[in-house]
Length: 322
Image 1 (spheres, rainbow, N blue to C red):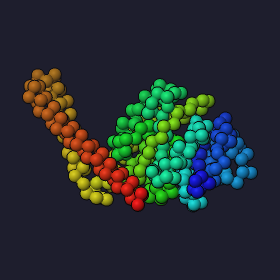
Image 2: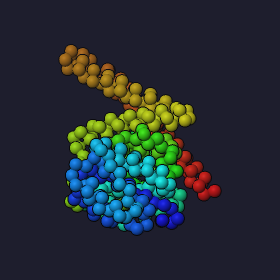
Image 3: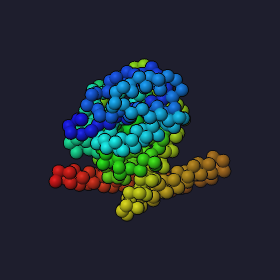
Image 4: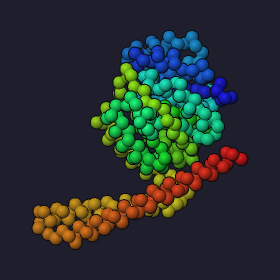
């Protein structure tokens, strides 16, 4: 146990025959259960995992076909809940996540400061050491989009899979609805927001060695972008319409509609000027004004969204201190 809490670690693994043994050997002794999810590996990963079966802490679960990292992690979450684990961490099977930083993720949950903690490699240059430039740029870009999608505007590095979550928070989430692929971490953040959970970033240096990313970024960027848009709309609907009605949703709706109309009007005005020799200034200015009004509505929506989140967070902290 760790500070009177039962700790579980979920390790998703897909074709990690070269690194899975190093990962499993590195898990600290205070971890009570280690859920190794072999997500349909076709190499010797399953054989390497079986070598640890003599340690009763290890729970070996295999997916017969590759279902995605999100599916592997939710499988581990379900088993941990069934076993009565208090805090469940996630560490990749490629030995990328340094176990010496695991207490950094556990302590805020033990102290009731947070419900969900996640690593952050982008906060400063020291923490970013070792991260390839292209991956760093991609993470920074996704960070800003995920801030708006999830509602956690103080959050950085949403793609970081080194996380820990409390049993209480996990029970408040519909695990069946969590995205099954690499975008699961972005999707999970929005669900945590709707559930009223406190998320905390923890600075953990990036660690890159012999592992090779399995993400195909040319496809991944488009998939995650669409996922983030759907997640954003779902969060607004659930939080500001179903759970409680709030004018924030009106600001966003009018903002997006006016911005789209303004942008469409600008394109039409340009086409009308170039190909039909029509007037551009009047139509173009009207389209620009419409677009700017829409943008202001969106910005007001973001401001109110942040203020709403800050008030909820303060209330949660005070309730935990009572």
